[in-house]
Length: 94
Image (tube, rainbow, N blue to C red; front, side, top):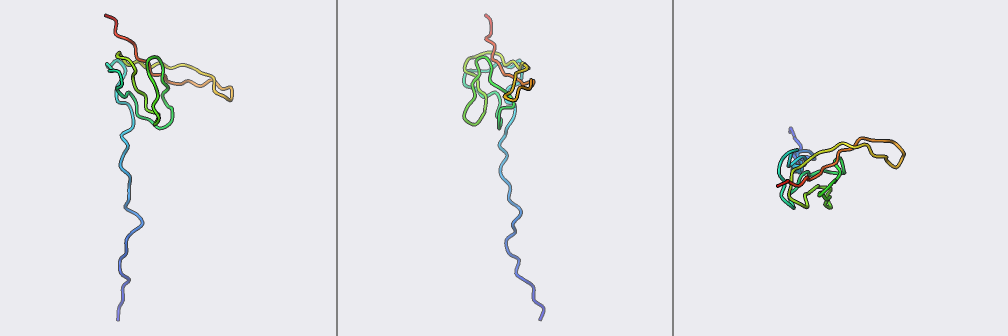
């Protein structure tokens, strides 16, 4: 008699949902206080003026204003100068 092993469950076929990381507000856009600017893992972008970092490394605005990205060279712990991007919120002038 011909036998075939019963098809069991496969180890493949599972995938996690995407986390929707990335830029939420671009440079020049208006940000309300508390709005998320960037969702990230790690600190690719660093908080600057009127911006804070949350527990999951997201950056959010603490004041109303315009989003601005600035690149600055900072010295790392090993003494190397690395260009890093800072996110600032610039207040709208009335």
